[in-house]
Length: 104
Length: 268
Length: 150
Image 1: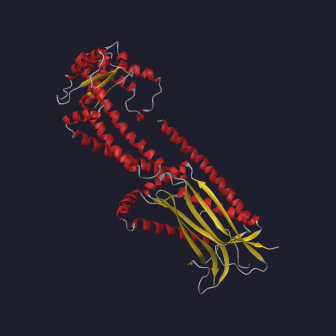
Image 2: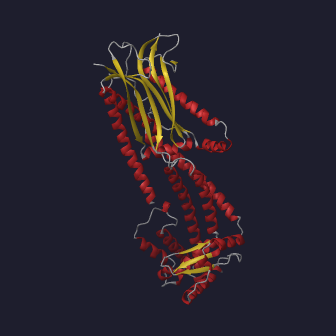
Image 3: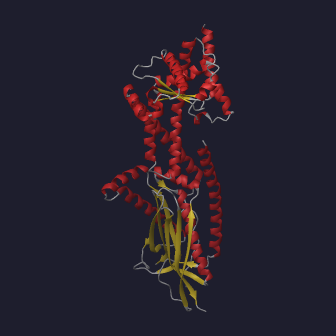
């Protein structure tokens, strides 16, 4: 599966456009990490646990989007967009969407 | 527009197919177990710390914490006399219990119609007029309640309960930073339930010691159950289940007194 | 004691009504998606050459959806252990498909056959006053509808 966030797939021609596909996941971080992050907030700096968690979740959202693209018979997704929003204190939604296409 | 179409995307890719009640069950059991274990551990820690409080420290603490009305002597002569009478009863019963001299027992009288008495930090006991009215036919009944409160003091229950209370409150306040308010409510309820368990244990222990004391003082425990019978009649059978109560049920306490009486008369 | 009864009642009500509403909503979504199947959606900006004269028009659809008491409770517990919050996944899936449907309905009413450069936005609303309170989510879908000039 080729993913791009531009309109085309460089070096290939799009022969078929299959419409919107998307993937989402909502994840919560566990309370221990919340406490550590709270402490880290005092001194600032990267919250490694959160970076990892969000990255993992984003990978899952991407994976689900790819699954949808596979299901409609596409071999690439163009114009991929990501969006992240906080659903409640401690839980975030990761969302990916794009247009499934067939390239040659 | 050749080559442009929107095929059907199969269902269920973005939604986890798991029954919501299954997750609910797993989470409730997990969280409840976690809170119970932590609450029990913190309870024990609090009780351990409280036991290291010396009697003198406890008396001094009570002096600072308790409302001023209890430390003042009652103003009216009638109340004074009532208080003196109750103090004498307490002193007589206390002789059988070997309450340390460092923890002087002070009885206070309150004119409120509450059918109850209570023991608190530093050897203070409050007896309400309502209790005196309910037990006016039998001195043994009043003595049973008084001995029960004395037993709390002897066994240092107020201090232990305070230590447990502080420790569990500390634990629950850390939960307050997590999750939703619903979740906090749940944590509080479960934490309180573990506290009730200890409360029932303390009441049962105080009842046992009180029965022995009353027997030693009067040679019989006849009439000791009057207070509980009175309280039981007042409830009209509308009592919450045992797990949600601070005290053992009235029926259980009456049964215990009857068993004790039967045993003693059998021994004679 | 009474707190517990109130709590269990709310949980039961939340579960009963929430699950019922969710199933009903998904049925309605599937039905309307079938109805609007001929109206195509793409997230690409480049519109292919058209044989007939066309004009573009911005269309949008949005929905604010709230979580039920049962899901809120489950999500709250989940926060303690971490992991996938399945309660929210179905909620957001519903909201998103509803928003796209509303956008498509608007496009259909304008006489369009396709929507281009579709964008989706999700925002948590009514969360400001009380940080702990789980509020509601807004999902918005927008794009350019292509309308044939007649």
